[in-house]
Length: 324
Image 1 (cartoon, helix red, strand yellow):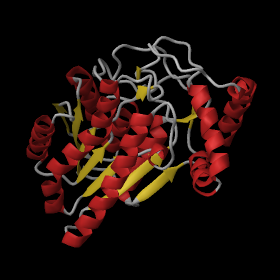
Image 2 (tube, helix red, strand yellow):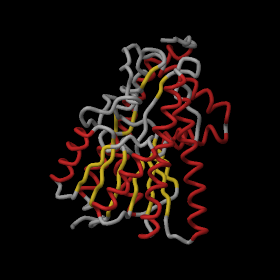
Image 3 (cartoon, helix red, strand yellow):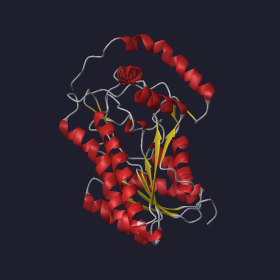
Image 4 (cartoon, helix red, strand yellow):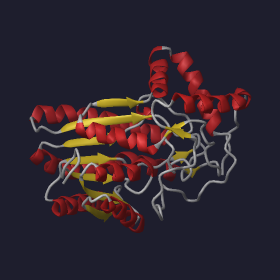
């Protein structure tokens, strides 16, 4: 099969939305053979059809990855269908929006389970296959794995946990000389449906951020990490700046993040209920309707920043907590 990934056998989770859906197309264009995993079977079949339009082999395995048995069964079926696994791309995640006391405890726990435990379930099941091929784990991480993100405590905790887990796993695999490598791609905000479909403790959606990366930008980074693995890659200059501020100029970094919290909490649209934590996507979607740009597009960044400045006065006042 033509393409830089020429027949590489790849299992991809979260394949029906945002970055995952964009990655389906990118990996298909590069000649990968795909096993696509998500909860919604109808949306998965549409994603697979798109991959096949690019000449790729694509199998679908609907599963709730928080269920360890279901995750194991999906991985085993995928390995059988593809004749083994060379790469696992762990991408699934979902949000619970609101401050700690606003978010229902079950929603908080579910966000951890979808974003962290589901990834662990898949990787545990896939590891024997990856050891057999000296394969690769590529994870869609987040800048939230490196800095705190108020209003999304459960998702931030899950991404911190995933980063710690993968860092540990890399050392374990090195000790075993298995040849299995780990690569993490850590972007900032992305224009995907994850915010729009967030389960909310406030009854409202998060406010739409003024600037985000396109899902295609992050999908390209996932393909790049598959071709040339780097253990951890932060995508985008703004993300790197926030990371540096928080690590080295903590008071300034915290003030920036306080502003981000207030921005998210100025949303007025009613939230979906119960949200993506509990309901799969009915159809595949990439965009969440946010102002987006490609990496390195400084003109769009300047335009988005100018729009944000006009709303800056609203960020000077605390936003009271609001329980649904």
